[in-house]
Image 1 (cartoon, rainbow over the protein chains, first blue to last red):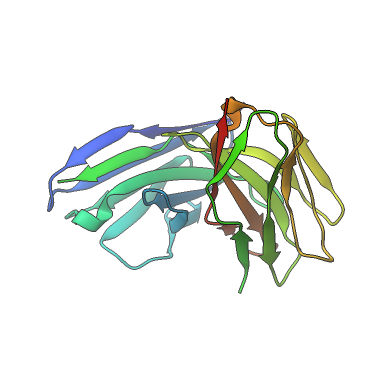
Image 2 (cartoon, rainbow over the protein chains, first blue to last red):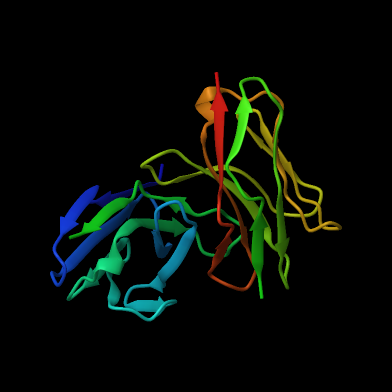
Length: 113
Length: 112
């Protein structure tokens, strides 16, 4: 069966520090991968999606970036965090061809001090 | 553009009450529709899905029917439990895209 892993589960970082969140998927190949941010009590904001290695589409211009160095690995990064980057970050995957749901990781709670 | 509209929450019910959470959508293509549930501090879990008009998705006592004529996918449950307290998201996937569109979520609180 397929599983998705996100880490770390929680992270507290000072303003201006770098960020790296990692997501890996097991049990499937060539998935579509996604990063979302969820502000407290709010809906999901799509940040990035990827349909293949090295292929990244950005939905929201900001100081975050994403990379997909391997088929089932998706990384969210920042060189300098802002207070507004606080939130709950969710990674998700789906099979290609559509008509199928996304599957989400357990999320990373990021607090910026 | 494509969008999903959910009823505003929070919704507060007594245990064993009937639940309806409204969801309507706008889509240019032929969307698949989903309901997800999010428990505190966790990611989203797929609750049910429907891929074409008149399909009924069901899981754990929850049901939703894909109504193309009213562009709706309302979530229902006949008798809620305290353990159903969570945030519920309606979502759609539009053919020909890689994106999923989510509603803003509806918080459900069930009181014993």
